[in-house]
Amino acid sequence: VRQCYYQSETKFPKMVFGSETEVPLGQPLSSASGVSHGSGTNLNLSSHGDENTTEYRIKAADKSGKKTISLWHDVTLVHVDPATDRPTPYLNFVCEIPKFSRKKYEIATDEVGNFIKQDEKKGVLREFKKGDIFFNYGCLPRTWEDPTFVHPDAEGCRGDNDPVDVCEIGSRIIGTGEIRPTKVLGILCMIDEGEADWKVVTIDAEDKWAPFLNDIDDVEKLLPGTLSAIREWFRTYKIPDGKPPNVFGLDEKFMDKHYALEIIKECNHAWKDLITGEKERSLENCDPEVKGLVRKLSKSNLVDLAINDDDDAPNF
Image 1 (cartoon, rainbow, N blue to C red):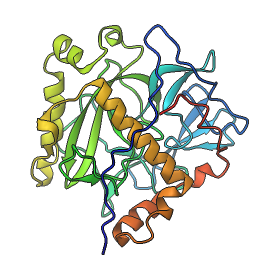
Image 2 (cartoon, rainbow, N blue to C red; image 1 turned 90 degrees about the vertical axis):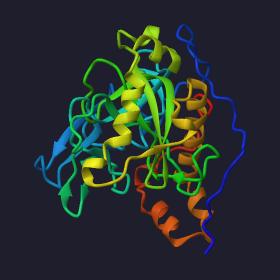
Image 3 (cartoon, helix red, strand yellow; image 1 turned 120 degrees about the vertical axis):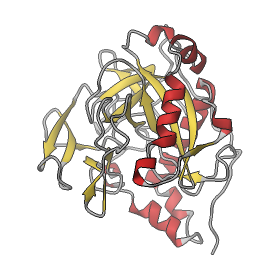
Image 4 (cartoon, one colour; image 1 turned 30 degrees about the vertical axis):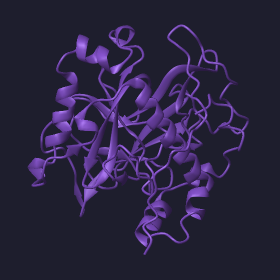
């Protein structure tokens, strides 16, 4: 059976980002359909079901409470200033696991609405047995690590079929489901049980350290030990579950902001292929396991997503 994994040298259009003092060019991201949300300003979060059960969900909706919002599909990748309705130089970060906590919350990519749930295995709710995580952990909306794509730097491993993971290193505790504008600083390539699992390092745009951190070298210089601690966390966090240490690509190096943005760009394009159905149409002769992974994901929130809605965003 053909595995249908591929490597790509496709050159995508250049990303358009502003600097810290310049607003990037582009049209406003709002649309007549109202499905895109450039920040968390107009969203409400609510809890449903009993906490510490497999039925517990954290759901996002618009301010009226009438329209369910997918934190994966309906939130824009590029942050939009709610005061001006213009794109900013920052990317939206959806927090799943607040710092100093250990419950393994995650966006339910295979459920209608993509609510946040606590991960479970065989009916048992999952927590980090290693202990509390020391950074805010979550993902970038409108990204997808394509399980048919093998990045040339990922040790021959395919994508993990999830949105791109984020480690936000600011000082505030960000709540589960909260959306924050963040500065991209760098990225680490983790190999998790044979899958590429990129970890983007960011900092909240309003953090006191944000003006001083503009690339990955600044983190090592001004906050020494932070990056090595993140790497060691991911290397060892599964050991208490009886699993071997995780390994890393690229000689275990954290790559810089430019490299990180290229990975994010690829994953944003992969997301577009997923939600338009282009990816599924290309899988006709592929491994049934891969087909199942792709088809399992929920795309139901995108029924009324206007085709021009995403074209209004800064180009990726």
